[in-house]
Length: 116
Image (tube, rainbow, N blue to C red; front, side, top):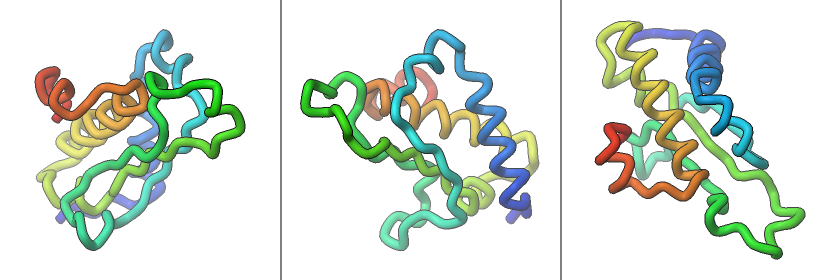
């Protein structure tokens, strides 16, 4: 497995976030993004996870809600990549995938778009 330090991996996540078009990035609302080494024990191959209320489902009762959470899992991503270039690509795909969930886009549609 590749060994990319957590701080360098966090930089790759930040670069992926920076690549999101400004028009979309402005719409991301009340979301915390973090990097964690390992996915939950019951889902060891999980690369990322969105937990929250998508923008498409927010209503009047959303006011004062805790931030949505996007978690990117470092070790599962590193375990499926053979070089740094693949890591950069997989981080980008995973970050976009999880942000898309924030916009209410489901896994089926993301697979159609190549972000599966």
